[in-house]
View 1 (cartoon, helix red, strand yellow):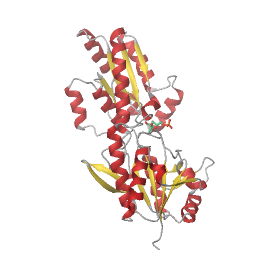
View 2 (cartoon, rainbow, N blue to C red):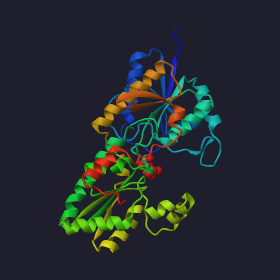
View 3 (cartoon, protein in one colour):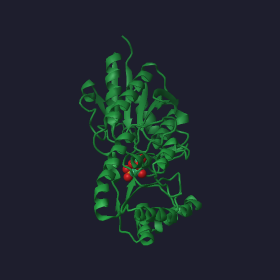
View 4 (cartoon, rainbow, N blue to C red):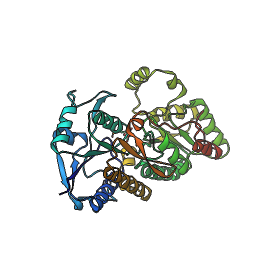
Length: 361
Ligand code: F6P
């Protein structure tokens, strides 16, 4: 009899839309083409692998979930010493426990769905001798080696929708609104949603802003009769002064700051500089919730089927990605090597400038 193929799946790090659609595509493809298959869904990401806590999955587990937000397997974040070790909450190295589960289940490979942290952790598992395939998940779109991650477009849709609604109330009250978007230290989400919603200013980490230039721009709008302004601001956006500081200095300043986030600080300063009433809206985790948009469902299905094919080819040590609309297999060490920030010469930045958007620079 042909030997069994044994695959583990896990979703790790912050959730996003499209995790279940990807899981579905992997399972459906494998169950269609591989005889003698066993799939283990690890609960709560690496925690399930550490503790040997898993769901034995049959074909039914992969049905009816394409439109479901979150992850049917649960997720968690793991601490790690970059390039060195994976640690539990008490600071203990957990690699041996993960290896033990891998060997006990006699796995052929583990498929890890996750963001930047997960790619790095997965590389450590690979270095410890496990066969690994990864998929790029995050609303931040900041994974190196792929043009797009699943979850990103759904978050863009939500952030755009928020700004659309804010437009009407901002117009009615002649106010400035700062809408703070997620994205960690990358501006992809804010830039796309800002363009889509017709924001007047877009502030992203990659282009430090000058508060006086921003205030002057808003005053200029008012002189032209445009009495409201919408600012799409990334949670990681920085002023020019903040950019001059070291990371340690910035961390210290953040601790001492009376404002709970960058947008409240900006709003406070802008109100004083322009004399115009200013409000803040932070959609936060709402951007990660709910159903994946159709584009993410299609991307997740393309990614998931490609990952299943890598399993069938026994091609391990790769992240599935997309480059110029072609599905690619990126060596895991490349994907885990760095974060994909927005290049300041990205064509979308010029597109935004062409329609009169300011980046405050
Ligand atoms: O990486 C996804 C993300 O949503 C970021 O945009 C955000 O900075 C972070 O996760 C929030 O993390 P948490 O879920 O731990 O609050």
